[in-house]
Length: 524
Image 1 (cartoon, one colour):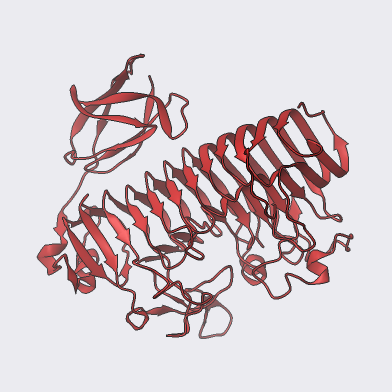
Image 2 (cartoon, helix red, strand yellow; image 1 turned 120 degrees about the horizontal axis):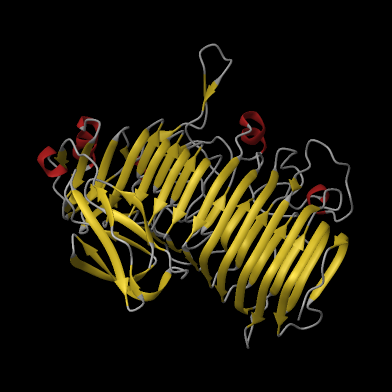
């Protein structure tokens, strides 16, 4: 057996087992620390807690197939631990502990640790500070208040004194708009770890945050996130259960080199706009061992609508998602629709998609602009079960904006290519099994004036449920509901189909229109 240590602090490590399982290891294994067994696990990504700071350890794992090599590691140095209860926090589930926990964060020196022991801590918003670790005990809960007047507002845009520049704090769906500060908010901070086995609970419901369409009447601002990182860098969030969010759960925004490890993101399936993670205009992101079950897209990669995308041109790039389990979302992994600065270099591999509406979901359309380029997108070694439509590339997305149903956005006739025209480059899908599908094996529709440059399907096996539901494969006008539809492809320059099998469809396995170059034929 083999494993890598992928994360460590002064008191814990997280390992990733290399046995080629997805989420679940092929066999349960035991973890040994300094020669003593500490736990048995059935997961590929596993965290070991209870270690001491600045201490040498050895670790190995073994199962019936054998034993790994012994690795040595030294836990991180920790200068001091600040217990929030010594600062006045009660943790009784009633008292407002916001000020006391914020005092501990503000007082924590570089290299220090803010510790939340067992308890339920009622808070409004907490603001991060650079160079510290925040550690929640396994039985600690950060429980958010829901009364809107308690929440500060982050202005969407503040003009500089000389009126030449601007300072953006708040955001909503790709535009600079006023928003309520999030339960955990980071602004221009770096080198922060938020860790622990505890819970971050937004306590949201239709009685508070989920009513309405996004802009709440009280305060006139948009809903908060659970964790919002604005212009931050080198942030790691590990181990937490994050649940009942007012809106998006995790929102790294113009933030680089963030890591999201061994998390549970849980919202009711019916909760609106509760995306699991929305990386927006980021460079460098790793999500590994994260479980999603929620009411919208599990991961939705974005880079702003027209104003933000074209003013700042901050492409979302260098993203890796692996060993994640995505359930019940609209899309397991979505690109868009706010992608005016594009997405470049994304890899999603070794993941499970279960009962999502779509597997890959690309949402774009005319008007996103010439910088809205999607390129170098790779999906590899994915298992899907119960996904309505495994692959959707929709260049006519009709939601989110007032002109979504306009002739310009929805016409299937070619328009002139200009500064408003988005583009889709190379996308590769390999080693994917999708069973119990419902609506369509795939629905791919590029723009007629800007076809998808290159689309590759290799070693793909898709089969349908015995009693499939009928639904829409994509959100575009003039599209009829379908069931057991095969692979539909329209407007692609280069299409490669190698070892592609579709079982149980009604009609043709592959239906193609306006494909300029077909490299190989499908099988099945």
